[in-house]
Length: 53
Image 1 (cartoon, one colour):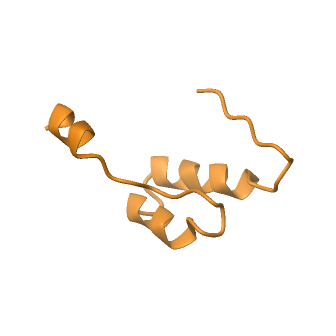
Image 2: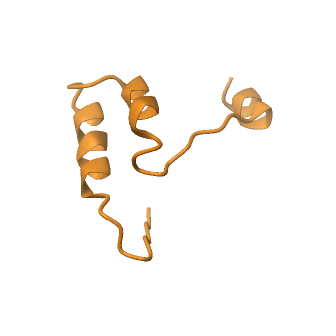
Image 3: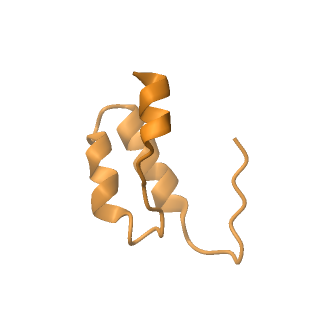
């Protein structure tokens, strides 16, 4: 994965949050609580859901 963030915005805590999710320290749904803080929003796709289901 390549992530480019310009201009340089403090987002290190976002990646630390992802790490906490990875190790089970916080649930994945916790990202919904901080999406506005990190300007990362999650959408849904019927096509994607159908392909995965």
